[in-house]
Image 1 (cartoon, rainbow, N blue to C red):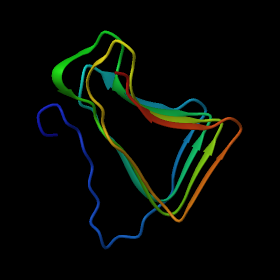
Image 2 (spheres, rainbow, N blue to C red):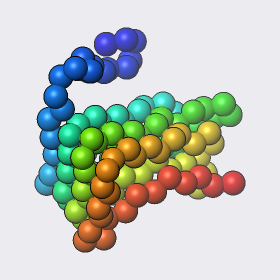
Image 3 (spheres, one colour):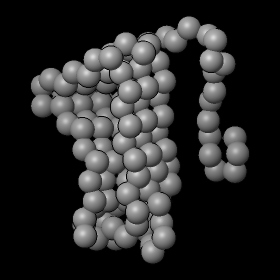
Amino acid sequence: MNGDKLSLSVPDGLPRADVSLTNRAGFIVSAGGGGDIAITAKDINIDNSSLNAGILRNFGSSGSQAGDVTLNATEAVTLVGSSVFNDVSAGGISNAGNMTIKTKQLTGTNGSQISASGTL
């Protein structure tokens, strides 16, 4: 723990395991600024779940920075009926965060959505 930032690191030499989010599991780091989501694994499976970062309506201030969303899978990222968002909502004031997905295969089914957007 570093201030209000919680993180977990794994040495580079260890084999990666799979990470699954199912049954409406997820991470929400949307508010007035900050809050990163980073998942590193062999396979990342997101099934009927969500990852949400960004700035909410009427939140943020001049100079606020939304967090980043990073999915890093050595094999596949699979979304089934799920969403990954990093958005600045209408009425939010800030700089948008980054969305990075590194994988050999990206699959989305059953209405899955990936969105990184802002409003002017």
